[in-house]
Figure (cartoon, rainbow, N blue to C red):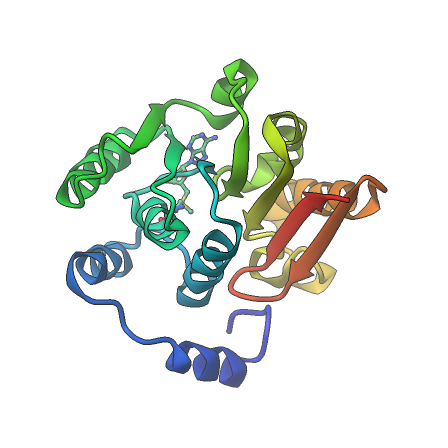
Length: 214
Ligand SMILES: C[S@@+](CC[C@H](N)C(=O)[O-])C[C@H]1O[C@@H](n2cnc3c(N)ncnc32)[C@H](O)[C@@H]1O
């Protein structure tokens, strides 16, 4: 049960998505087999859709894992974008670097090693698209920095915003997840209530929020 949408709907929509092939499929299969939390199938396609529409020249990603979504975004943008992606787990960084090399993308996709918030605080280069996919309990803390770094027409795509349904339903909330859930609700309130922003919350995958300036 995803607790975000009906299982039959999710299965149907996933069934429509063609399997990936080649190295990307190998990376995706490795992630699923080794429980590396990469984007769900439909979220991956959504991200590709956004990149193909927006044609970003510079992308910031919070949460590299093994580089799967970075590679998807690079390929879908069609602009040979520069991608900066932040990751703090050494093992993930090692695997991501070797995956980027397999695509010859290690010079286009730069992994910033460390904590997202610390790196965001020190960053000042602008981005056309920001993908938030790390530190679910800190999206509300990342937001001011992401808005500061976002170009006038830029877009923020935030994954996991409904967090297994817990964000929308008190009955689903597990005790040890209360802080993450409260902070994620704060994030969603901030991006939906700010009159300078327009945000669409989509019950897809684990919940996606897409935000841009009005
Ligand atoms: C959901 S995974 C990213 C998946 C990746 N975007 C993909 O779909 O291919 C989240 C990653 O963020 C990393 N992470 C979590 N909190 C972080 C933080 N505060 N700073 C840096 N990395 C963090 C984790 O180690 C994990 O590898």
